[in-house]
Image (cartoon, rainbow, N blue to C red; front, side, top):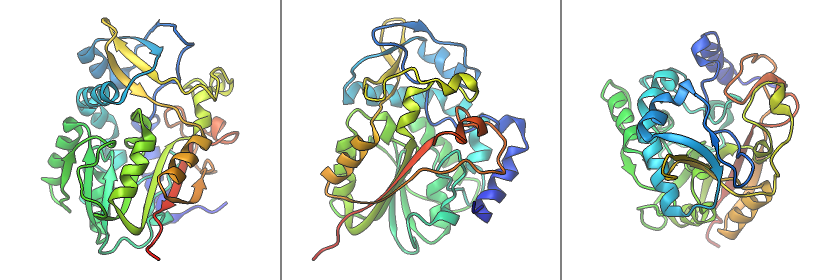
Length: 324
């Protein structure tokens, strides 16, 4: 098994600190049974957001684009401070050059080059959070723009850039209606960004295809769809399938009045492929990272125990056809 030098250095730097044992939490627990409400367990990682938003229960229910985006904006605004208290160092937010890590398995763009040569390229990062990936791209000679629905997350990125290093433009907007002209970007990317949190991810694919130049590449990583069927647990309890893979009903957290405070949407591998092809893009690769043999830490629901058995991440490499 190949160990990419940059990835190993990066993860080894952080895996020794207990604070980062559960550092990468791009997803939330899978849904509870349909039409069932249950009390949300006390989650110290998100206690501040849960308290601010009054999160009281979880359910599975259909939810449209507007309500889904509203919930995501409120959630990430509320969670931004506590999220960065735990995650900023791992994500490279306060590093002068940022970092670009695709997934909990530690794949780093500096080693993987999924985007190809970024020098001089215009890049759109969707769901950039506090923009460590965009800042890393800028340090490699690219011209990135970071887009995120949460002003709280973007403000954290602005504060980090004020300390030095590359500065990149940041835009507050949703992924289903990109505020850019046709064929504006050479490349687009999303590392556990907006894709799992939107109601209409097929529309995101069409929007990305619209703003990409011919020959442009679109690469995004998400929780592996098969993770949906297992509890969000890195231990043995997380090895037992409990939720139907084919049930696309979103996972939703709600407040005491039933207003959504957090939403995550499920798509199967086949759904993702159809969305990509339906947008007129070419699917070049689906990467399912192995768990690194030398990584013995748990990362949220990711762990060596689960990683030996099934993948935790799916990474899609796509391209817009060039002009004839």
